[in-house]
Image (tube, rainbow, N blue to C red; front, top):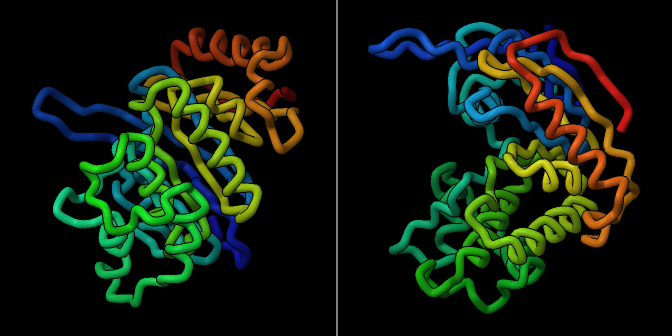
Length: 265
């Protein structure tokens, strides 16, 4: 694989084997994935299929056993300033204010925080005036809003989202999904979302990639046909329901890795 001058994210032959005391665990096998600049994709699959391993490898947090990942001309072998990440938990340090938590990545990189950008995003996610609050003073949904600001404050090219809303109640999760779509429509960041919610994957993404059972491979890609912006009412339509059920059925019948195929949604 050759790096490209544009900001295409390329994953080629990504294979990951964990060495454990009880034996080797083959998490990923020859994963190939191309994400164009500005695309919003979701990755779904059976539990334990290697979705999070794939995401963390793209983030430069896990070293591949073999294969390569490149963002434009840069090989990804460690955390990269052009790649931001939201985790399953907000992971806000309890002894720092919301603003201080958001500024932490700048401190780690020894950069001056972009105060104006942070203020803009705090207002955008409904946290204007909460910058001096402590995490314990915010609800779970508000903490995740702060984590969105932290991930976007440094203006990354790619945003990785590892099941960030799984712990939220259904109503708050819907609100967060709509907020993420609105921010994406404004910024057109490249986004990769890992989620166990098929409905969330379909609502947010341009494409949904289905992974096989471990060792994980990309088994199928589904184009999502719904126009944007998307209303939450979309989730109540027959077309949405049928597409979600088709993907669920496909995941359920993924006993092992198989070659990738593409279908139209």
